[in-house]
Image (tube, rainbow, N blue to C red; front, side, top):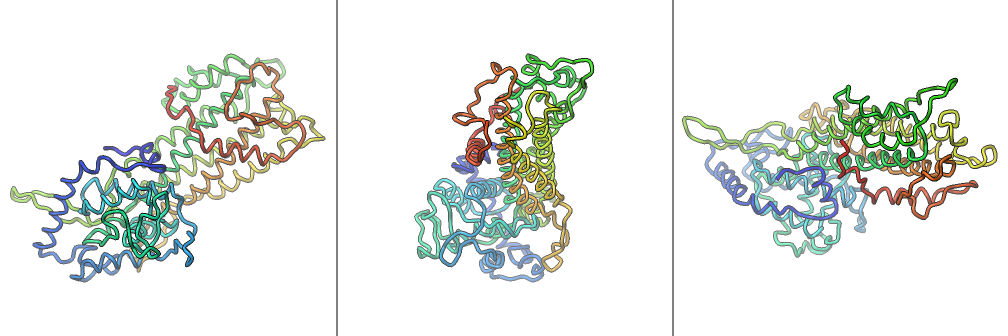
Length: 507
């Protein structure tokens, strides 16, 4: 099985891994190899099994179970529940589900040596929607997503809490650590706590979730353009598919193929004495939005590569010596999420460009000298009514906020952990920043969609204004009024809608 972003995103709502049983034999054989190594190997300095962690990995200790619990306890430092049992600021339930799914899938690939029984318990948590509460903060994306992921084994021990429809099925301090799920509460065996904790699944899963969420918002913005260009004329040459055949990028071609058939039916005519090209925010839509589309696809491929990789340390490897196959542990930096960290910054940059374009396109819609059709600020009576001036201000605020927030996190390394982690990629911090941007993107798209809807009020060719389900039962504004209901309604509809471009090829 290859875990795609669409598969991961579906886990936000429901589901478990049906293929896990197919992996049982292979995973149990790996566990047997691990147990054999522990019993027969003269090496008593295997990292995270005989030794402590990070700067404490310098001496052998036969308290193998104690070491695993030590890892969990020393990392669970972020309160997830108040003393009264109320959740603090943590991941949303959907986010926690995708993180758990990503960690389970990664470990089920093999190489970690974790027991099948432990992975089966995680799969049951997904199935019953009994999801460990995970904190937002604490990962540097090396050594893995330590603090957030450590709350998975803490919950298995019965010492934290759960969210979801089946949250009462899990063991907690409040129910005396009693669980209706077989295998819980759980006791970590050698290597298991570090396998659950020491990986990139927090950063990778959240970034994958954000890529899918933003991609849907982005594609909805393209659909809105098609609605607008049914009745609003622009110069069509910039969108002619033949124009874009001279370059090798897919994104601009997709945009042109989607919009040109509409634009060409209602073209803007060139008139002597007037500008014969639209401003960049209109004329360069294929280049601007096409490059963002290409970037989203490229980022998605990076995330999928990491989702389908084992991120752990140490891992079991096999090598041949003198004709004999030998199994041993190899130690390294499989927990280091550099590629994901770079990708998180790339997504933020792509989103920031989209914000900037929307802000400029809103200005185009509200400036009659540019659009040559709609009144100032899309006001039914400029000078008396302010129209959408307030929405314009909010859009600019959101854009400025996102642009200010776009400093790359992947180069913000700070040494820590007794200098053991002397250079770290900070991807999880970038991902948390991206969460804020995706949330703002929903509001900005609601503003953008209402502005386009308002422009239809002033369309010179009203017979060309199409029906659009997004605007059902909403009203345009002729006299100034509060637009809080319209924006909130549009945000909810946008969040609960999937662009048909997600599934419909337009190449």
